[in-house]
Length: 495
Image 1 (spheres, rainbow, N blue to C red):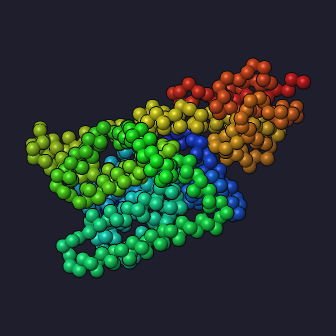
Image 2 (cartoon, rainbow, N blue to C red; image 1 turned 135 degrees about the vertical axis):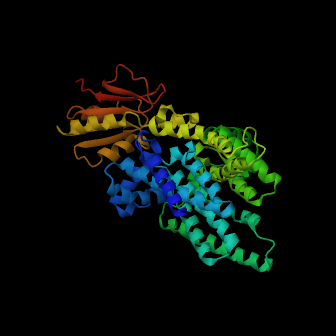
Image 3 (cartoon, rainbow, N blue to C red; image 1 turned 90 degrees about the vertical axis):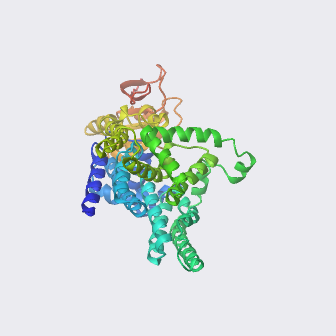
């Protein structure tokens, strides 16, 4: 029976992620990662290409087989996140069952499936869904390790954390949070000292395995770039000590707004209720789950220099477990107003799921109209990182290339331009792609090319094109609901 329930949850998770998977236009970071995967797949010497930008390579490595299976590279890249969601919902269920009950596990799984936060990132070819999946399984194995004290659990946990560290630097928290496991340490059992040292030894084993896996990246001469890249997103400890509150308060304000918008008001309320119940009842399990959220959350607020909502994704999953327990408590609370019957109680609980479900439905059917934080809206839909218009440009260039050689210039040398065109047109021998930055004039190289071949120029950020430039507009494409456009021009030979 339980296996059937998990199977149903897995199927629902898969369907909610795979349906209309391509209805969000390709995002600039997705284009970068997919292009890296193509390059690494084509040439083993470039398997560590992600390190050139200070990114860990596991996401691009996992993309390799799917690029072989699926014809659309964007679908292949996003399929990794879809599978991550499937494994994540299994982990959510197992944690809730281990700590609470099967009913709480069901509630937690439903919250995960229909959370707008998890849904949107489970449909993008980014590292964050993969990291969140590893976070859930790391949390589950942390719990099993402190409760069971078994070597096999320690070994598997080390591998999971190692894979997480090959995904993103934030996975270091999965090591830092080992001491928090002692909150669940059973003080009533005999031989406490011996069991503590046994747990400590297993923690060391797990940590060593994870660090060895991570340090395998030193095989690449680009390993050092990871630290350099991290410093563009986080403050150093010395900077924090010199002025600890310069970013803490503003970051907390922004992070809480993002958290509130993504987990939705009803779920936020039950999370608070669950925390209050946990604190009042001195429930160590609730406190432990909250620690897994609050430690990385405060660390990001204190040290974050450049932050995005997706950085918070893996931290919020323990909150869904707390919310699930609160919903379970609500359905059992005899004092609930208008809830003297079980039917009324479950209707009340069902109302909690309505708004997240509605938001998720909008994300699946018409994502541009979904209520998501402005930062993500600009990146995914309304501003230059969004890929509105690129499919039309690619189709146009493909058609022109059937008649002979075509030259395409892009405003940008890294990111969506020119990566997205290299992804879809790079294997077309009749298409020549050049990236330029900044574009203060029509590049002389393109003007020269226009004398011989049809030559085009795509602008991602520039919105006003001087009329004296030798360009003729082909099309412009509005991004989402915003006021910016992808501009597509042909370079004209005026000689």
